[in-house]
Each structure stands twice: as C-alpha cells, then as structure tokens.
Amino acid sequence: MDFVVDFYSLHETFLINVAIAVAIFMLFLILRRIFVNYILKLVIRFTDKTNTCLDTAIIRSFEKSLRVFFIILGIYLSSLYLPLQEKHDLMFLGIWRISIIILIAWGLYNFVGNFSNIFAEVENKLDISVDKILVPFFSKVIKVVIVILTFVLIISELGYDINGFIAGLGLGGLAIALAAQNTASNIFGGIVIITDKPFSIGDWIESPSVEGTVEDINFRSTRVRTFADAVVTVPNATLANQPVTNWTRMGRRRITFNLGVTYTTPRKKIQACVYKIKYMLENHKDIHQQTIFVRFDSFNDSSLDIFLYFFTKTTNWGEFLKVKEDVNYKIMEILEEEGVSVAFPSRSLYLETPIDISK
Image 1 (cartoon, rainbow, N blue to C red):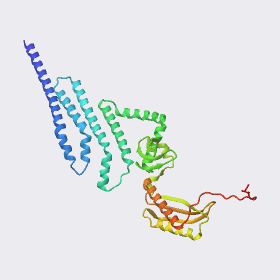
Image 2 (image 1 turned 180 degrees about the vertical axis):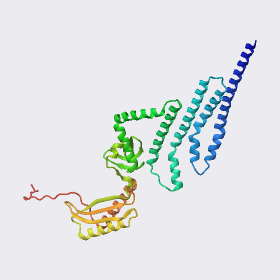
Image 3 (image 1 turned 180 degrees about the horizontal axis):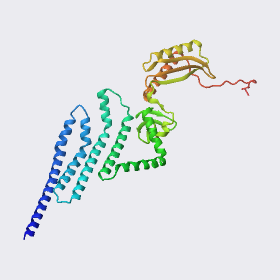
Image 4 (image 1 turned 45 degrees about the horizontal axis):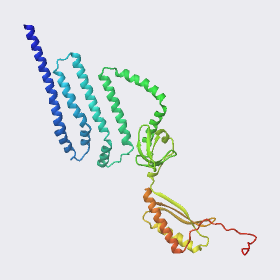
C-alpha cells in the first residue's frame, strides 16, 4: 500500500513539475510577444528621436537576437523543473551557453553591417574624414573575426581542446597557403590598396586592366563598373602591381589643341585672334587662371597653327564637356568677327606641261 502511495506521489510530483515547466515556457512566449509588440517598438520609437543613430543601430542589430532569446530562456528555465538526469541537465546548460554565444555573435554581426551609417555620423560629429574604402573592408574583417571567435568559443563549450585545435589550424593553414598562393597574393594586394589608398570607392580609375568607377573592394578583388555599365572584377594582386591613374583626384582638367587657320590669313588678323582668344579664356568663369597659353605656334603643311593650352576648374566629365563646348563656340565667334577661316587639309599640284582643256 505504501508503494502505491509513493508511486502516485511521484507521479503527481512529475505532473506538477511538467505543468510548471510548460507554464514557464508559455509565460516567456507571452513576454516575448509583449516585448516585440510593445516594449521594443517603444524603445525604437524613442531612439529614433535621439541625436545619434548609434543607439538605434544597436537596438535594431540585436532585435532578432532578443526575440529568439526569450524562447531560449523559456526553454532553459523550463528544463530546470523537469525531472531529468544530471547528464541531461548539463546538456541543457551547454545548449543554453552555446545559444547565448550565437545570439551575441548574431547581434554583433548585424551591428558591424551598419558601420557605414555609424562612420558617417562620426564624420559629421567630429568633423573628420573617413576614407570610404576603409569602411567596407574593415567591416568584412571584423565579421570574419566574429565568426572565427564564435566558432572557437563553441568548440570550447563542446569540450574540445582549443590549443590543439589552434595548432591544427596552423598546420592546416600552411597547407592551405601553399595550395592557394594566388588567393593569398590577392589578400595582400587588398591590404596594399587599403594602406596606400591609390583610389577609393566611387573614384574613376584607369589601369591597363580596366577603366571605370570603383564600386567595391573586398579581400580578393576590386569591383569596377565600366562606362559601358558592365561590372569588371579585377584581382587585387593585379591592381596592386599595375600603374593606376585616379582621374577623380585631378585638381583640374586639361584642354589642349591646335587651331589651324588658312595661309591667306593676314598677320594682323592672326594677332587679333590670339589676343581675343586669350582674353576670352582669362575672363571665363570656368577656366582655371593659373595656366593659359595661346600662341601662334607653327607653319603647318596646310595651315597656320595657333596653339591653345588651358585647364577647366571642374573635373566632372559632363561639366567639362559643357565648358569645352562653350569655349569652342566663343572661339568660332571670334573667328567670324575677324573674318578668319579654319583651314582644312589641302594639297596644291603643279604641272610642268600645261593641260589644254579646250580639247
């Protein structure tokens, strides 16, 4: 009879513990819904009104992690009330610790993805300039570091020897490095580009391999969008070992050409054209005044050449073409005012024996 009483007592205790575990889990599901629908939205609404985007970035980065955290916490606390064996309790504890590591790493990984907005705010607040090339590169580096540290911590929680694991990585890394020399050279090429900074994201560059606008720089390659709107991926090792012209960093843009006029143009007309063209350039608002040359330069085969050499203030391609067009129109106007004609290639032919055209 005592055995039956003890059995019913144990059975009743088991059911009570299971009921408590289920109640705890349901409570955390309700708390999760309240947190997501009310508290989290209220916090985000408050952070959106602050003067910094850092708090908003942190909340939004850990938003998904916090949602999952309530479920994991509910499962763990529920497991404490279940009549499990000690090894099962240790298993739930290990799962809980690994889950926390993954959730924190998940939030940090998302936070690093918002570095571009954070750096933009730092630039505005501190009045400093952060190169655009550094933000995505270091963002990817930090993401890789987070993934590696998370993996190492999980390995440690599972009971494996980290020292042996790291030593194995060293030997394995040597074998991988020998088998992937090109990849390693591209990574070092990317480091050279980052440190030397021959160009940045958004710059217009030209090299023997490609010409266009830099869109992205990663560990292995640089992505360039050409003027034909195609995307070319160039290995970093190639760009690091080639001469690269960064047209974006021009302080001004050059215009130079020879203006050929006919040989029948009088000397005074040429002098007047030279003077008026130079005067026009010196008073043009879009022409850089540091270097302007307008000179009667040479006696060409079919023309008398006036040499022009000057720079525009703008380096933008579209604006440059607009200024160049305006200068050309003004030069044409000067030539028309002076009655001077532009020469074209021609050749005179002299015959020793005149041709009788009457026949």
